[in-house]
Length: 195
Image (cartoon, rainbow, N blue to C red; front, top):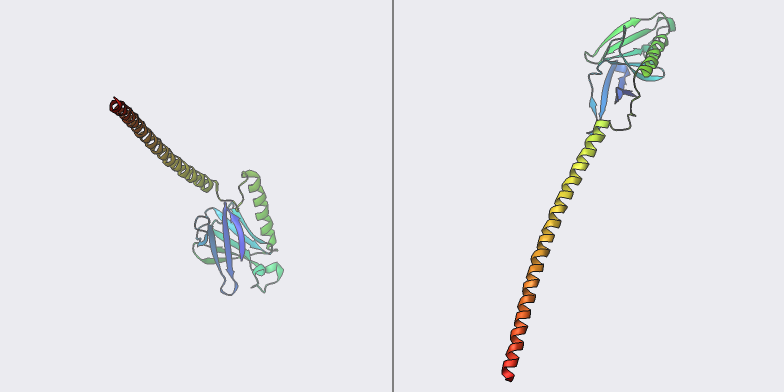
């Protein structure tokens, strides 16, 4: 089993030794689960004794394939000088053997040189542990939209409360006027009785 970053995606590569088979899964950040992947685009994976590396396909390297040295995966009995490099097509699920007259790590060194060249040529990428910028931006825009909706709701509530306060103030003024008029009438009525 190998975990590898490839074009800002986290890949899980499973190797089934007895069946000479690979399965590649891509982690879907939105769904928080592993999804079967059948396309690496213009990328390839190289597996050697040190792990798994993802690089852009160039020259005679085929895209959407896994390159591996059979001795490193435990199923070769050939001497070191006669080992095979095998290419597995992820899309077609087929294998092609290449006889190598040197240590397979020589091919790995070529790929490492390609990785170094790409890292100089490509701008730095964000960590795979961070969600992609588009997801962060979408999340922030969604949060902003929710806050604006809440603010609008609160504005309506304040306007309604101010309207109610205005209505109640008018009623209080009317009651004060009625009370004042009633008091005046009672006061006049009291004077009339005395006379």
